[in-house]
Image 1 (cartoon, rainbow, N blue to C red):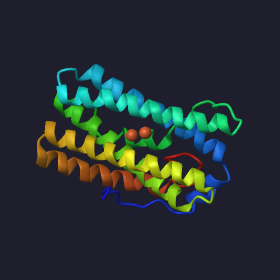
Image 2: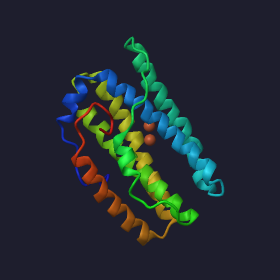
Image 3: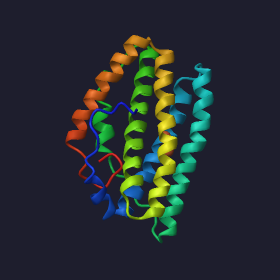
Image 4: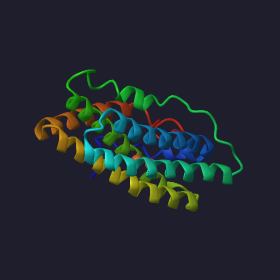
Length: 193
Ligand SMILES: [Fe+2]
Ligand SMILES: [Fe+2]
């Protein structure tokens, strides 16, 4: 349902299980970046009224996810660490050429956002099914549902604002590109690593 072309190697969960502090730190920053993305879309595309309205709601939701992860880190007696580079996102953002019309740029940003939500959702599902810590598994199950809705929303907006056929072709090409990136990943204790 997420359209992803390469499922995550389930052994990734074993790496995560040994490094809960690292995964929670990385995850906290993912939620922060999701919040920033929503704000940045409001700043860059103010005339897309429906998008602006949805992004306002998304800012609130993503920052509340950040708080949930942050609270969990504190509950475990830890302090939020520093952000690390997200190699996955850095590689992904090289796909579409820079420039183009405003609509083209918007569509590209929406497709990137849809894909990052989709992959996060897939990773959260895996955590919810495989983690031995049942409390943490439930935590990820709830978040998985939210991220699935975000994926649908971003892809829906891309199709709404761009040319439907063109957007669908770009989406498929981006999914192929992402699958290539994923072949080299699934080896570290980060949400997308
Ligand atoms: Fe989130
Ligand atoms: Fe999200």
